[in-house]
Image (cartoon, rainbow over all chains, first blue to last red; front, side):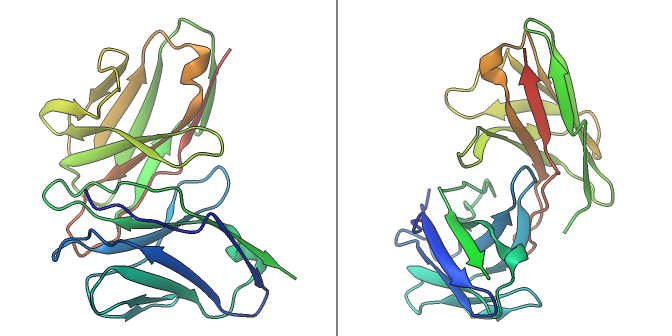
Length: 110
Length: 115
């Protein structure tokens, strides 16, 4: 199973862009990268996912390197409500399981 | 993604009793449901995969006789924690399997406290 590596914590000033990196060097060619976040005592919330092209939605942008070994989640204008643990996950082929890593705890400060 | 309803959101039970957690897929026929457990300050850990009409499969180290999973219909999967002990106190979360190009939806979670 592909695994992901993320920094344990990051800080970001409110209104600034938050760039959260993720390494997934063992990813297979047909495995998607997913990003979720979890606010305390809630279920994970889907943010965005991609295969090899960069993606953007109303919440965030996902930048995937050409070799697909790493990606970056960008929250363009972070707010205090974006304070959460962010998980980068590679979906396992065939089983479709999502195996969570340790995530990045993002703290947005005023 | 699918709309998922998980119930109860919070339960306190006595040691030795059993607790059932329900996970409903409201607008999606879930042939497969993933069950996760999360201890305080830790990440989600996949416990088991329930399959409609067949036996569940469990991840390594998860006791199948303790965590009974039933997936009797395409909209309902249940997890029963049998003979619960304080060490089973955790946050349990479900998520239906969806097509590869969809974002998975998770239940809101069940906080189990065994006293």
